[in-house]
Amino acid sequence: MEKIKLNAFPTGGLHGTINVPGDKSISHRALMIGAISEGQTVINHFLWSQDCRSTLNALRQLGVVIEESATQVIVHGVGFGGFKAPEQPLDMGNSGTTTRLLMGLLVGTNFTSNLRGDGSLSKRPMNRVAVPLSKMGAEIETTKLGTLPAIIKGSKIHGIDIRLQVASAQVKSAVIFAALQADNPTTVIEKLPTRNHTELMLRKFGADLTTESDQKTINIKPSANLRGQVVNVPGDISSAAFFLVAAAIVPNSKVLLKNVSLNPTRTGILKVLERMEANFKVVYKENTDECYGDIEISTSNLTSIRITENDIPALIDELPLVALLAACAEGVSEIRGAAELRVKETDRIATVTQELGKLGVLITELSDGMIIHGRKNWKINTNELNSHGDHRIGMMLAVAALRTDQELYLNDAAAIAVSYPSFFADLKSLLRRS
Ligand SMILES: O=C(O)C1=C[C@@H](OP(=O)(O)O)[C@@H](O)[C@H](O)C1
Ligand SMILES: C=C(OP(=O)(O)O)C(=O)O
Image (cartoon, rainbow, N blue to C red):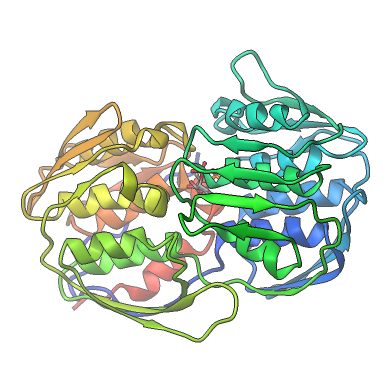
């Protein structure tokens, strides 16, 4: 329960350049897809964070040899059918992505796996994956509540046509991973298009997978012969977003964020910043796999915004930050259609409302979102904030603290290492006192 003092208002603003750490979603997928391929997969700019460590350790327990250095990871693929039965339960830590994607890989093995997670992960819904996978012949046993721990008994997987009930890239990816091991083709239809890193990467590794023009329908043929590749992981826009917002809301700021993923299924935060009239520009770089580029942003006079269900998947992890932007904007903003926030590391509607409320932000909780009243100055009624063990809430609060001149502390700050271990060092490098 580490408690730290947060940086208050930097009188000279935020200035400088950040080379944003690797994308978490892409790092997880590069490990897993590398593992089920033949030959070596070299991952450059891998994200060394607790969540990605959970995936790496689980794959090692399944018999995959993975070499690591500060800048590179090399996965020695074992191909489909190459996993070994783990001797101990697989520890998913805090990571929903590790759990749900790995379920899709494990359902087609010839052994039984046990999955467990930390206190937060053990409250999160796993039926959303277990139910569609069961329709494909998978044998998954969760608790009565549909949560971890889970037992997965490897079985024969059948291809099916399936319409998903939740807009979730994790559920879609699990079904795609199972479909690769099936005896006939699968078609997945999403509720709304979600991040497509799994599809892009699988195609690169040689899978027979097509996405239809609606961006929601994916056809997957069983593909046992994936080949290892070099994966260059771009910077994570979900991590860059903390500095995008910090520079927009702190006076006298100008920040350059380098090599950030600009995959259109992830850039909802940029659309929000544009709609709120923020000052920023994006320079796209040449690429062959995932889009990426640089973003320069400076202090902005923000207008209010209305976010609806269709906006959500492309900025799901940035919604706590959108609430903060709204708290600094002119007028009343609304976030709706975001009930998925309730099943993240914390109930992010409740934790955002509670913590921004402590800073004097006028914010009302809705069943599926929030109403936020923008204000120039907040009336702070505490000096202790709490991440509630949720990395994104912790970082959002550290950015919010920059708008105040009071001494504020963050409880449970260690959670930030789940996705961004060097967050405070990077933030500190930008702060200027005049
Ligand atoms: O597929 C992924 O890598 C992720 C998908 C999202 O979850 P859902 O698919 O459950 O919305 C996101 O919140 C999570 O941080 C990472
Ligand atoms: C929800 C998140 O991750 P996961 O679902 O992988 O735990 C996140 O990183 O905000």
